[in-house]
Image (cartoon, rainbow, N blue to C red):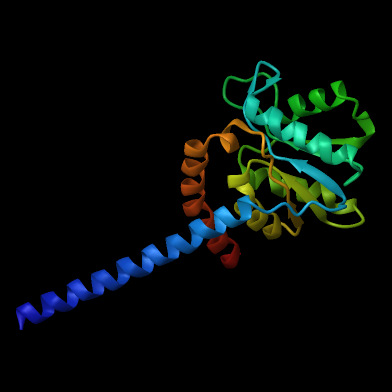
Length: 202
């Protein structure tokens, strides 16, 4: 009897391992697929997800996101931009404020800019964006970030009642570095299903 029980446990372990690997592979494929999609079309707002800034200057990653958002704005996809991101540890200004300053310097009128300055995570930022969108004619927003981020952004945006249209920037240092991009996609292949499962519970 003992050898048979041991065989059954091994079989169960292999089945569970196979199922877990399959679920991860599906998640990885979904993150990669969404990283390749650009759904930009006319919407109520363009939302720029924050990234690191250095003493009031956008990091290369943040600058790539800002440039992509400004391009969408100039092409008439939305008449306002929402910059997100709070004040990081040891920072003296918020990521959103850096985005606002950059946009003003590049000709975006102040009336077209909104800011979310309290979020310390992607989820918190999108929750605050949803509150800013309460008076908008529609809740369609174009989400701008790095390609690896798109699937989880879409999941989180829907959690807070937004209608997400993802538009990844292709010029970020992360997107241009295959090794870095793969590392972030692998990371998101774990985060995205967690975000999805949490959404289903709420």
